[in-house]
Length: 119
Image 1 (tube, rainbow, N blue to C red):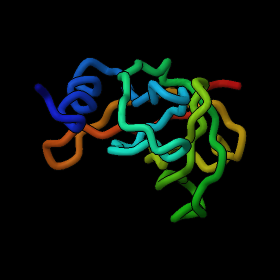
Image 2: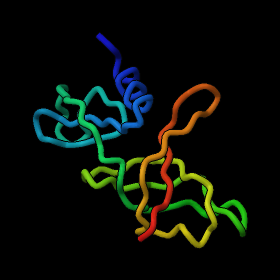
Image 3: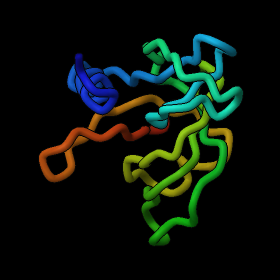
Image 4: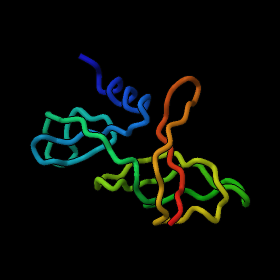
């Protein structure tokens, strides 16, 4: 049986963001969990996110011309996750900006990142 990390990474390899949904309370999380943060449940189903959402909160840009770094992204499915942002001109990033999933590679590992899309 594959581990939770393998299921998540297999999804990224297919260009998908997979998340866990609690069978007891339907709570959702992109973090790999043993217990549901809402009800303490231990049974999860894997679901596929649309990969679309909005920036909920973001870190300060590292330079005046380009922004990137990290943010909290709220996905259309109703959960939030810490995420990397693809470096773009700073004027394209603000809380509420629409974003979509983009899978990137970092040191041989696949990572979920988000790119702003036209509002």
